[in-house]
Length: 98
Image 1 (cartoon, rainbow, N blue to C red):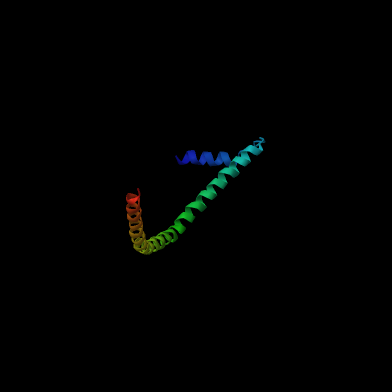
Image 2 (image 1 turned 90 degrees about the vertical axis):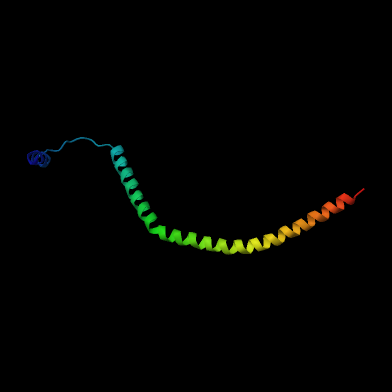
């Protein structure tokens, strides 16, 4: 196995130039793959770093919703009782109409 690796390395060191044309499409492909890799790594690191901040924001919203729900339920109970009173008044006035 080591002999095989040695031959591979020797062939790479002593190889001449290929004098082949590499078009612009190959370079653009390499740059596109490189940009994809860089953006993927940045996004992964960003998600990992933003995770605790996101959890704090969710907890703050949940606490805010809990306090507004208790206030809203009090006001909605008052509004529903007022609506029921108005419905009864409308029903009684419509039943008395000729």
